Amino acid sequence: MGLVLAFGVAVLESLKDALGKVATRSIPVASLLVLYKLVGLLVVLPFALPHFAHLPWGRLLPILTLNALLNAAAFYLYLRAIALSPLSLSVPMLSFSPVFLLLTSRLILGEGVPLPGKLGVGLVALGSYVLNVGDARYGLLRPLLSLLREPGSRRMLLVAAIWSITANLDRIGVGLAKPIVWVALMSGAVALLLLPLALPLRLERGQLKFPVAMGAADGVSAALQMWAILLAPVPYVISIKRTSILLSSVLGLLLFGEGRVWERVMGASLMFIGAVLIVLLG
Image (cartoon, rainbow, N blue to C red):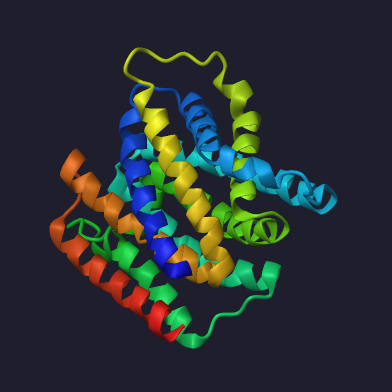
């Protein structure tokens, strides 16, 4: 069940990527981030409020503070990355977060992964890598060289590293508070931290639809992810979530004229095999 929820997260994340790519053309990154996090908070707050009464604040507050600081930086870098570079160059760098998670989950949670699961995680990462291969000048080196050439790719790799830490902190957080409560706390904390960068919040007519749609997707996606990591190991959940890289790359191809079809087919096949290994053998 946890991995089914993770697939739902992947779909919502890819939708948010496409909306963010369009929105950052006309809305400052900090303003967009604060607004859609506030909308996400409004989505989950009615369900979270009844559970606020008896939270263990003494244990919860340090984890919440650290996680919010890291996520505020990561979300800001994330939106800057998709604003600066094509989705098919920036988003695939998130494929490295499951790889980083193999280390961070063991260090933070003591959570190991059996060999078939490791192979599955590796194939998901490799499939995402292949999505970005094909430049006649660079061939297999293109994804690595894009780190040097593309500012969005560099930022997104840093996001992947940060999220490999915060995913484990999320696991601790949802152990102290219900998943929906943790999502509400994180959305509110991230919005509050970035609010000074976003002031004054000004949107032109017709722009509000972007943070509203992104916020709705973000609130539901975050809630599904928190429930998923209670039901399955964190590296597995994040690996399935990262199939959004394929969906985002396809949207980049269809909506923004990015990418090559053959790379997408090969990458999709590897990611599918990896997902099957995670689900059936992990």
